[in-house]
Image (cartoon, rainbow, N blue to C red; front, side, top):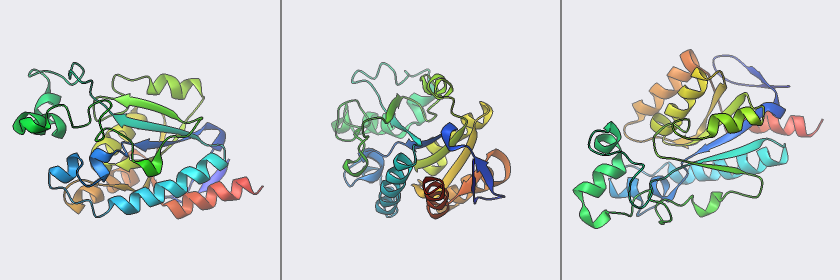
Length: 227
């Protein structure tokens, strides 16, 4: 058990029951020419988020913390994306853009495309676990819950994109499923105005979990490794 500095108060974490959950760190959301860039979203925070995740992943692996990647994925035929009766069809950015811009059909967050791939700097390593998902939450329609329970995981450290969409959706579902969700605020990047990021952090600080920083998490992981 190690104490982790966090808001609104420190939280004691059992590292043998902890996983670092890296959400959707894909070209679609982080790279020039990816879906967010094509949609006109601000990518100015992407490079920093990648850099922080590189450091955290190395530190977590060294400390024996399990690493789980979530990867937003549609099949090439979009059979798992939902048809016109699904709200996902009408609201998810990739689905909307591929309909509105026919030249993009089959290229956005679609399995085995460049846009879909996890960025080169953060490629999963042997021992990491990758779970694909076709909705914002990593718990919807996946084996994430059964995997975590099978590994006796209770504490989830969240990084990734977007803070206010897929990270928040997955972390909220974690809370509802009796996990301890902890957001690493500088290891994420948001979409839209900055008040989206602020609202997510407020929600988790006050309602759904805890918020920490990469420096505080690194200090806790390193202190345990040096025992």
